[in-house]
Length: 150
Image 1 (cartoon, helix red, strand yellow):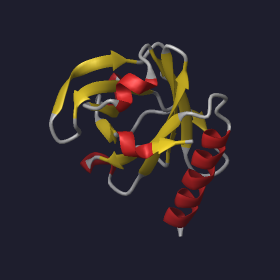
Image 2 (image 1 turned 180 degrees about the horizontal axis):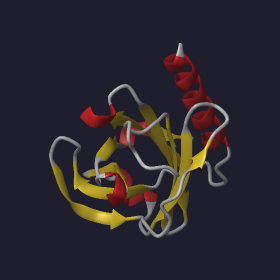
Image 3 (image 1 turned 45 degrees about the vertical axis):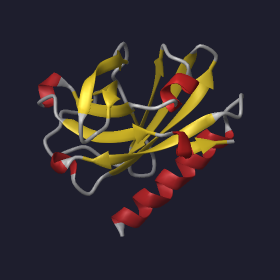
């Protein structure tokens, strides 16, 4: 039953964020939970912000034992989740999250790169716990042209 509530919250958040974009251009990237975070779900909506890209995350949870308040680090890497490359953009000037009334967490970041460049291919998004929680990669998602929103 908890998974159903998490899925519903994920879909509602993705639709709200997707509909709230001012430019009308964006992409939705599903986040796949890593082994330490099995059973959790997530998504990130990317929006064009001129020469930058806005990223709005929703995740259903983090591994047991993660220190609260939940602090997460986010990266855009070259390469895929299966074959990650070097970090292209680290978005860690703010690492706090916000607990939602529905089960889950939200947080936002900005990357100093145009959305069109990210959609051109070869990038993945990684969500990692803070060092005091082990610096564990808990989600990964691949940015693909096919995931664009209008």
